Length: 487
Image (tube, rainbow, N blue to C red; front, side):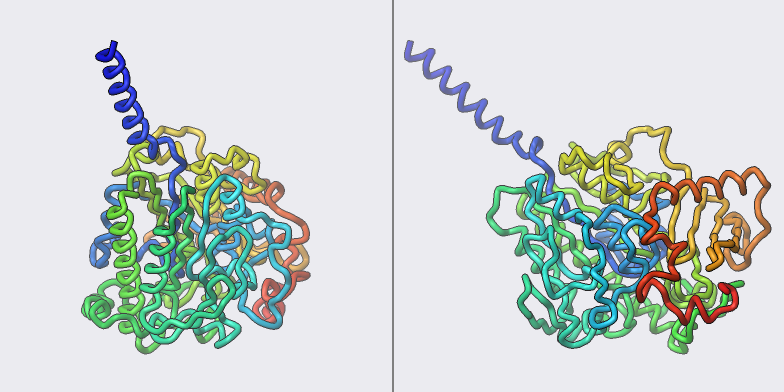
């Protein structure tokens, strides 16, 4: 009898131990979204081996990299608002860079439910580190985050947050914090501190670095020195296009080689931060249940077509591939992701929004008002035959649709008429010149798809077609009203 009881107890202990060991596989995964600022897909080691980014290279090699990842809105605030709401600008109403202070306090995103709020409802503890910029608030914590470390732009001025090194004014849970040093390192350390907090809940971290955003200066010399000899190999000055210069700030600067070297060094700095994050996770045995997504808000022109900047680098707004394409890499445990994949489907930040909710077990993500789709099946290496055929993007009164070969940029004038620019992406001159439209059937199909999309995903109060009635900075009188093109 005693022998049987002992055997039964021993088996029970083994089973309990096995259940304990297996528990992480059934838990909701930890989720980290690292978002860079103004980081073009072209400046990624997976596409240009001259980039010094070993940690990003590892993430891309071992995880899933998306070749056709794009932003839904090629400007900071609009892209970030779209990521956090899961909606297009024509739905949430943010189209442009929202500075902090008088003149921009329009109560943006009122009534919207943020991704962080939904994750809290699904049992996550949540934190934001670095750039928020989805509405006018940064010093005051935003709904959906248990921990908040952003910037206090009202204290020193909005440019302070973009200093790569020096004294930067932060706001931590509503209280001012000063940091002197390389700010990317500070954000990384604070994110790791959040990971270390004792808590049984899974965590969601939105870690937003300002690099490689301007100013293109003050990056660590040890990193800049790597790129100075090769900057002009990567992008030489001398480009042009059919579009006019957006402003004097958009022309290629005299110190282009140095500015480009600084920009690229900023990406290497972020790569180092990714390494610190992964080491922290591995050292705490958390990699086996943590999903890491690495993305950017939008791309950037650093001399291509003779332009510096993003969509507003030209007039009218451009949707060049370098402006709209973003890094998009997802890495995680085998139970969630089949690594060593390259996917060619169109994906964007709205899809990432829905994927995070899907991973968190939120069954309402398929009922959201935005156009995003979960990429969970793609991460599992499943063959999906009904994926979206087109990528659609907007900025102000301009909308873009592409099928990968043809790109239509449609500009809506105040009188509701349109100006169409067609581009053949297979042309050897790329997008230097507006090309002849494709055959009629393709024109009709793509324009119908574009109009149908915004018929579904647009609020009349926020629609880009009505940009003329919208508040500053959505409606920019200098760029829109004073140009004869829009009269």
